[in-house]
Length: 279
Ligand SMILES: C[S@@+](CC[C@H](N)C(=O)[O-])C[C@H]1O[C@@H](n2cnc3c(N)ncnc32)[C@H](O)[C@@H]1O
Image (cartoon, rainbow, N blue to C red; front, side):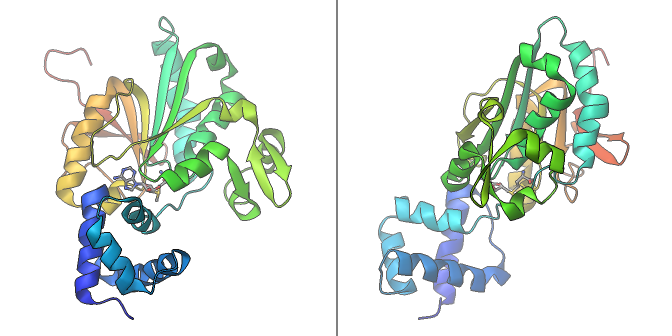
């Protein structure tokens, strides 16, 4: 049976309640397709039957599965390239000087999906800043979806995924082939930690970050939630740290404490110095 308007509204509230995201009206057919597939897989009579189970246990594992199936988890290695160039040319060289005394550096990919973003940072560090491997270096990927985190931790990707954005030399150097798939070598996997964290719920205790990637995540939240998340990101960032957002995202009209800074064609956000603080 087709998904009713009432059924769609229930799922919309479920998603909002779990992950803080507002599903658009035009996603009705996507919701119907995903729900039908899960109902089939769970050997339920259909979408209606699935909805009855979800209503009975809105916080159960089946609800989590449904919500996770509706998240957009699109990502790729070195996505958009420019942010990684800014990291290589300007940000990391500067950070290495600034943090020379502590020899500690923390980078966070928030909403990391299947891990390509933070593994790209790990490859860039191995390739261009090997001295950092002797520092206390923390590379953290977090996501609300346990399904994508399991993939990220495994570091196994299809031929299609490794052909998107990854230089051939990096594929040969940092991956091992397993049949039709490619797995990130252990030395690189060991550099990265993946943790489950809902940006819309209680946050884990994380160290203060020098660089935060929050790319292509805010776009799914309403204005109020974006402001709430940015305010918490502000607390999580060192005063001289850097925040990357996706190409279609910005802090403008959301959080005036972030100041856009330009590195070539990339915009990076820095915290404005407070009155009385050194620039
Ligand atoms: C489009 S992907 C972006 C991946 C990567 N940052 C990039 O730009 O390539 C968005 C990710 O945000 C995650 N996400 C959505 N809502 C979230 C929430 N409330 N808390 C944490 N992660 C969330 C999704 O599971 C998904 O993996």
